[in-house]
Image (cartoon, rainbow, N blue to C red; front, side, top):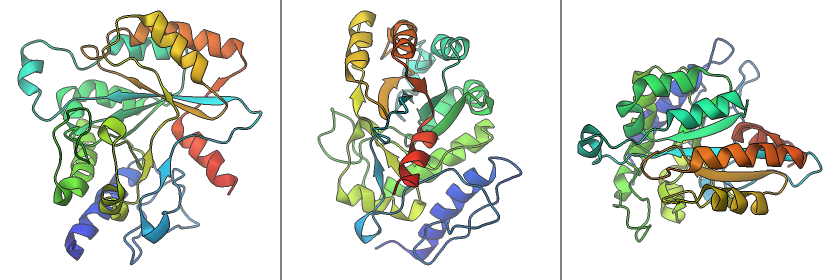
Length: 281
């Protein structure tokens, strides 16, 4: 059972992150259920309504409409225990990928771990302040929220909500001026317990319907081909913003973007797809 003070802390952490989005937003008031209450006087990023029994809602893709939109998402992964590897020279960032997305003018959503933001605060701030991008929550430690998730260490049930709160705090300390109320489970692994544990934070969990296969890949053409063959209107593509674990992503993007544009696709952020999906309910 979650103590009320912990629930209030979770809501306040998300409220603070949203309030930092700009002068047009104010911190949402919490309802008795722990979710931010709607207000006619504020503008908030779109989220989905809670699922059955108030569970955290899960978003996979946008509407399959003639408006051929697609969202490229990039996971900036770094686990809590990878500091020594970073100190030894391993690169968990990918500034060339961000530069390419800027050069190609591709709106994108970056799901960032709190540990990544701590390791690369200047990059986190730069990405967060660029209107081309939006930053969302990918947990603090990148530990799994279920057992047996690609060999990742597992976070305990009572620490799941803290993983979300601590990440928004890391964003704030890095100088990210806004952070979206979206959460991506490490490895994409979740169950009912995980959805229940995060319900009081008010986030929408974001999955995907196209796996790029860029993690640990060495063939950029194969990654590009997998994405191009899988994308449909409203698709969410999962890729990575981590040089050491996804070294060919930037090269793949240089193929993916012009090819999808030739097919009539328009790149949008996850928030736009969620807004379109919510508007059709």
